[in-house]
Structures are given as structure tokens and as C-alpha cells.
Length: 595
Image (tube, rainbow, N blue to C red; front, side, top):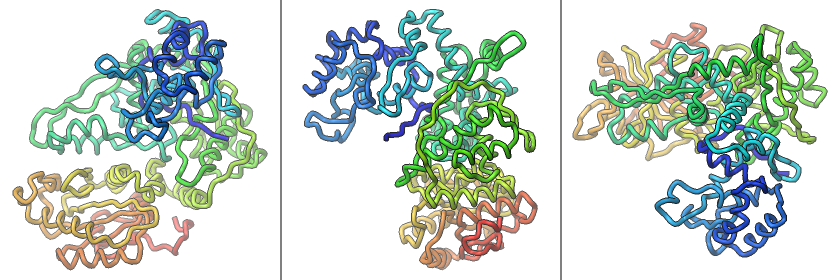
């Protein structure tokens, strides 16, 4: 069986196209008639698809498979398209959602990726229902009302507002804004949104991003403002966009002074409107209003699956789904854990507490007070697959380590994701920014993310010392790499010589001017180092006469815990720079209990 993801939408934002998506399932709609009368004939490329869709619509079919709705990325030869512009129309949603370039180009259909996004959106707002056994979709009663409402009418507007107030991530954002005394950027919202600390829910530190923007050159500015964001930050930006169109949220452009004392455009800030504040309070239930029940599906409760692991995501969804069902009649942590055991889910209390906190940031109102836990929302009943799922061994091991941190430290959950991303080469930028954020938030050092051409990943410093930071995410561990030795040597020499002819971007200017010239160090951070890495440290020191080291993520977090507990003075960190792999806290090999 295919298990899909709903509840989280990154790109669609056009309510008109959303309505077209819903009208695909409504035989009485004008759009359905247009598809039947001419769109299928004119736009669908392959004859077999054209015949299949025409027969379906001629017979007023209103339930369609995922393949019929989203299609694939095929070229005219029915081979996988090498680029989007080569793909041909082969699904109902592809011919329903016009691309932005439709007015200037002849292409009158979209790609399968965009079609999938609009379908997810329609399902997430309960306009379209999903049958996971058949992998098919059809319109809901609410979707029918939306389909029949007049464009830009008060009825349409009220329907959209109502579904937003039943959609947990939207109510989470409205509540955050309602409780904030000032505007919030996508980063400050994303930092408190979704299943924090998991793949698919990264958020970048707001101060770190603002500092990066201030230190960026003119070529980097637009890219940082638009393209550099965690997935939760992107969800925050998209949902705020929907809410602003409904006058529940307002947007404001900010300005900052950069490192050259010039005014630059900053990140957009969001704040709640009077109408938005009134709406969220009504939705949450007041003396005069009955609370709106939240719409939730099993498919909302985790998004990403790890490569080669098709079961852990479904296990986490099921665990959280049964947790929500348990909360209807169970009001202590122990009774919820007992309920989970009845459904063959045996977890530690720390995992349950973590799940409860993540359900809160997802948008479900839950009160936790020591051993007491109270569900404060009504939730529309939902189904759970009748199948047994389990975590893979690697995830079980990481979860045990994370639980030790949850139990014995105060490290925020968002930094425990480092155990995952440090071994994922596809998430290099996440690794760079979150590592820098940890040094800033927990170690209490100044941290600037740099990145880009001819720059290290980051600079970590205070008035006494500076560290040139490079992060390496490798699945099997990081070993000696001659090219990366050369890079680090160049960064060290750049900082030492500070010659703008040698490197005109002057990245070293981020360091504090009071740092003594002999108090600069280099540092590689990775998930795990191979034995050959020691040679890399030796060669770097030999070529520069500068000291440094390597820091594995486990020790990075143990060090953060030690700083919080005042067992490690950050000003003593230079003493650990001995051109070897650093151990802030002595541990037994592979022993997570040492936390």
C-alpha cells in the first residue's frame, strides 16, 4: 500500500486555483464541463489517457486515482522528462492549473509536482477526501459548498476562513501571533511550528539569518531573503500568505542597517489583525461560541521518510494518532502510555512528552502539568491503518540517545535533529545553519553563518578567540579529504593575511576586532569521523601552524549540555584545540547512557 503525506503544503497559494482543483471532482461545475467539452481533447497528450479521461467525464465520474489526478513527468516519447519544459500533460489536475507563464507562452498545463501540491492543499483543508486503501480522492460536503460558491463572494471568504480555523498549523500561527507583542518573521514562527527537531521541520535561527543578511554582498542578498529557509520557515511563510489574503494576518517589510551602515531590505514580518485575533478566540471557544473542531488525518502526523526506510514514518504517525485518541479519555502520562501499549506501541515517557510538545507546535492545544495532560481541543475523528509498523534499528538507537538528552538535559528539541542531519549529505545547509545556531544559543558564543564561494561555513567567536567552522554531513562518516584540507588552509591564511586582493569578500570582518592574532582556531564538525581524519588534522596544522580539531555531533551536544550545567567554561574551549578529535565529556564508546 502507498502511504501519502497531507497536512503540510509548501508552494500553492492561489485560492482560485485551489477552487479549480476542487471542481475537478464536481460534475456540476463549469470547470468539469470545460474539461469534458474541450480541455481533455486539446491538452492531454497520449491517446490512451485522452480516451480514459473522456470516458470518465462523459459518465460524470467524480472519484479519481492519484495517478489520474497528478500524473507523471513524461516527455512526448513516454519517457521520463529530463526537464519540466519537456513534460506533456497526462492528468486532470495538470490541465486544470494554468502555470504563471500561460499568458506569455503557449503551454496551457502545469507539471505533476505542482498538481500534487494543489491536491495536498485541497485534502489538507478537507475540501477533498482521501481513500488510502484505493488511493482515490473525491469531493467532501464542504468541498461542494466551496466549488459552488461565487468567486470573491462573502460565502467563499467565510468558507476559507472556517477551514483555516479548523486547520491546526494555521491556528498555531494565529495563536503565536496573537500572543506576540511585536511582528514575527517566518523564522521566529517556524521555530515554533510543526514537529520540531524532525526531518521535514527544520527552522533557522532568526538572529543568525539577520546577521547573515547584514554581512552578505549584493549578489547574495536576494537569494538569502527568498531561497534560504528551513522547511518549517517555508510552511510559516506560505500559511501566513493564505491568512493575509483572508485579512487574518498582515505583512510588513522591514529594513536593517548592514555591516557597512547601509539600509537594506530585511525579512518580512507578520502580525495578527483585529479580525484574526477575534477569529482565533472564537474558534478556540468562548462563553458565547462553541469551539471549532480541528481537522486531522493520520497522514498529517509526520512527513519525511528516511532513505531506505519505508516504515519509521508510518510508525511515528501511528504513535501520534493513538496518542491523540488516548487523550480523549486519559489525562495522565502513565494512562496514555498504557493506552499505547494496548495498541502494541511501547515507548519511554520522554518520547511521549516529546510527541505531546510536537503536537502542540503542530496546532493541537494540550496542557501538560507534571504528570497531568489535558486535551483542550475537539478533534474530528480520523482513521488509522490497520497495520503494524516499527522503527528501524538506526532510528531506535538515535531515539534512545535523544531520550537521554530529553531526560537529563535542557537542550531544545530543535537541536537534537543534528543526530539525523549530520549523516544526511542532502542537508548540508541545514547542518551548517543549525550547528551555528547551537553555538550561539547554547554555548553563548557569537555565531555567523557564512557559506557561499570562498568562505567557510561559519565563524564562531567571542572577544577572546575565534573559530573557523566547517561542517561535513556524510552518511558513513567523514575521513581525510585533500581538497577540503586545501580549503581550510586557504580560510586560515585568508584570516591571517586579510588581503582583499587575495580574497575581496572579506569574510573575516565578522570576527571581533579585539581577538588576539594567535587566538584563532579551525574546527570541523561531523556526525562521525573515520580513522583517516586524524591525518587531515595533522596536515592542516602542519601547513598553517594553527591549532584546531574535529567535533562529532554527540560531543557537540554533550558540550552544550555541559555549558548549560556550568561544567564547561566556553573560554576554555581553546584548550581542547589540540589537532585531534575533541572530547568535551569523557564517554564510553557507543554509550548513550552517559548523558
